[in-house]
Amino acid sequence: MIEKKNELRETANRLAAKGKGLLAVDESTPTIGKRLAGINVENTEDNRKAYRGMLFTADGLGEYISGAILFEETLYQDHLDGESMVSKLNKLGVIPGIKVDKGLRTLLGAGDVETWCTGLDGLVERTAEYYERGARFAKWRAVLQITDDGCPTELAIRENAWGLARYARACQESGLVPIIEPEILMDGSHSIETTARVQEKILVEVYNACAANGVFLEGTLLKPSMTVSGADNADKAGSEEVARMTIQTMDRCVPAAVPGIMFLSGGLAEEDASVYLNTMNSMERKGAWSMTFSYGRALQQSCLQAWKGTDIEAGQKAVMARAQANSEASTGDYVAGSQPSSQDTLFEAGYKY
Ligand code: 13P
Image (cartoon, rainbow, N blue to C red):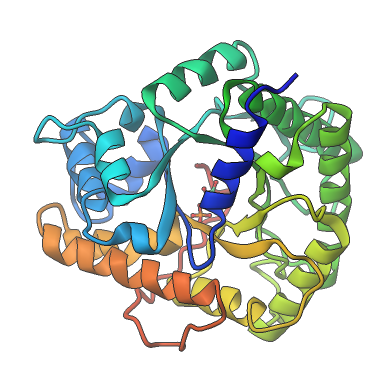
């Protein structure tokens, strides 16, 4: 029996509230290390604290951001002034969340590139502790890849969907809203139609597994990749087609009980991630869920470059600019180019989080 159904529903609705989205800052220590290396900042605990603390003290952030996904270290961390990061976020009206998976491992018996997501052992106990510490939602990132030699395999789809559903059920037991993230990597030269076909199959399997496990859908959020063509496809689909195909996929597969679809940016450049989302929200759809953002790279790139390790004011200004752009995009009100963005390509083959 899930006891905290009312609370789960309420938290999920707050996270998916109109005009708001999520800031994903749950990079593992090696991954944030790469980001910091890009601006010549050493990957020490103090520097991670300074960077994330800068984000969590940006005045007004809660106007655009409903929740922040943290890495475990950050959930238990205090900022330089001694106040906990959790308290900083709560003061801004941003709900703290936590990445609870323990990373990907090779899925033996499946395709060479395929993985399964670890972290189920002891998850009910761990999520209860995270709740105690102030987290109210969670993330688990399962990854699937499209290849010319038959991936994703049935085995990978089944294993990853099942893992997501088991995780979701465990979180709900402790009162954490699970973000269900079946990411399809952009790697490959496949068409957008192939992505759509594969994504439909995956989402159907995910919700089938959720039903089998008694997941309370009103207290969940979905975090999918957008339905895009492969990164190496020479004839890449533009924003109109991406928006149309993504809506078609979501309309076909996501139950009406789910309050919000929070897209990941997956290697899209900052401005593209905003424009694609805006185009989607300017089109008609059948689903009543909100379609908004849960961006990592696409919310942080220009901020990192502005901050450079020391400039708090410039860093906060940059993150606020992208947060506002994406907030507007989530209601179809973003005017392309009206906020500054980094032109950097954020796609990385075989991305590790
Ligand atoms: P990106 O937006 O950088 O893809 O990251 C979001 C995320 O949380 C992936 O799990």
